[in-house]
Length: 121
Image (cartoon, rainbow, N blue to C red):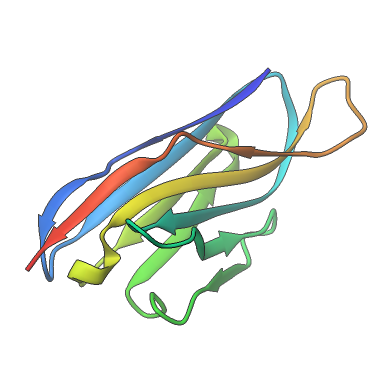
């Protein structure tokens, strides 16, 4: 069984920073792509940023230059450093990962339960 758990969300003023973490645990053979999504009230879930197994990164235009995604493969953890936060960044942030469990030849996609980020104006 594989689980993803996010942490680091909270309330911050506009212009502030937060760092989200997401750790995968369980019977894991390998993790390929990892990423972050977010869902604001009344809106669809949207992709925010992704990082490959070789640490190549991609960002949504709305966060480019403000957010930085990184990963620590030894800890099965992905991070999202969020700077210059805006009220429109308010959302529940979800971690996502493609994981090959131990004793499996297949790769499965997993989601964390989400962490709330609220940016006040």
